[in-house]
Image 1: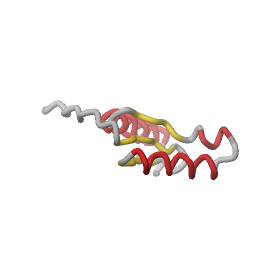
Image 2: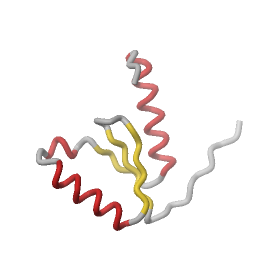
Image 3: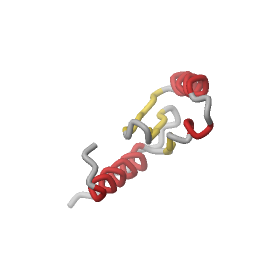
Image 4: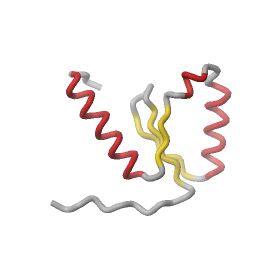
Length: 80
């Protein structure tokens, strides 16, 4: 079995997991990320609403987390 290769750190790629939509998101470009944050800040009036996101430093870490979430849902019997 081949070990998954670690992706290099890129400081203009932003890796986010959206817990409400249950999907991973990747935003490329600092301007795009700042625009996304500003939109979320405008849209999310409640501080708990903004807690729906988890941020990761690399795609591999985001991917590992997404796989873990999928396993957790399968164990609970969710069909998402």
